[in-house]
Image 1 (cartoon, rainbow, N blue to C red):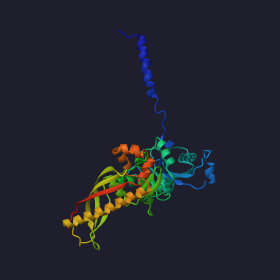
Image 2: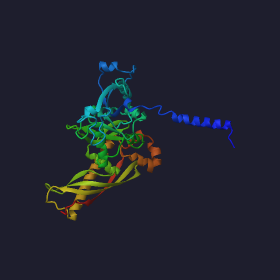
Image 3: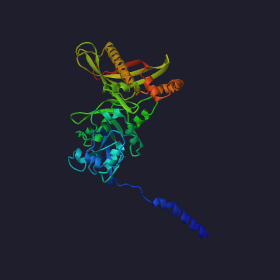
Image 4: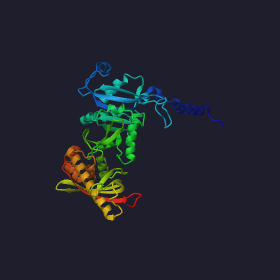
Length: 408
């Protein structure tokens, strides 16, 4: 039986209506050649604007805020190396031939980038942004504006690295390390490899934002420094109180943080003194376990931190030391235990003095003692002050697992 022509026409019309939206194509596409791909950004304090910078300013009404200088690394199309054998578009191309480094001044990050956009024919694109470097002076002043701008920008990945530089942040944007022609990729690889080797905890910008908004925890960031050979050193942790940086650690205290948090893999080494000149052995921590117990004593939280470390003997400085004796291994464990407790206690005291609970002890109180938190603490500001007064008991257990390929 033939179908009614009217029904056939309705079906055809419905098919056309449903198909037309699929034929519209990429209506909001932006060709890669039309983008200025930003790989890295640095933020420094700025002095007075030059006449040229004042004339290029887009916004006319200026707020009463300090100026910041924003520097960007823009990838040059066809010049970025695509693999180990790629020359990046030209043989022996250096950093300046693969990247375009530009800077601009503004009253905020967005203001500076808007002024910079006036100098470019392509739109700034942050989808491949991997590294944001902020100078220590800006971080101590506060990261409210920095966090707000990048948090609101939908193009910024939460797996980008935000770090604090010891000196001028712009220097890291213009560095030329020998192992990598793109400084941003070198910075990113330094931190990624440090995480894999147990030299640094995983702390991407998303982790920092998450920790910073918790009531019982503060955020921290990598503290980096550029050295004379243009290489970058992870010099410690920059820790915060709210949005302001209040202090930083040295490199060895990174291991102390990871020990208290029980983060693996472990990759730090310690000298053990067995009594006498050259009677030292080098040990490396291979694994960590931790357990934290909180109880309320005299109206304040008291934390007991149980830490178990497994270590290997890496080398000895003299043949006078025989490590095939169980009593020697016990001495190694005892010496390392005493040093670990000393390092942990000193580091805890340092963060307490600054009121920065980067370990999240306040979150343990919220989870395990909710009644106490709701009645006595309640706010982040109150915990920042209370953290300075809490007590810690440290129980550290050391176990020598391996002594290497030699029996003595």
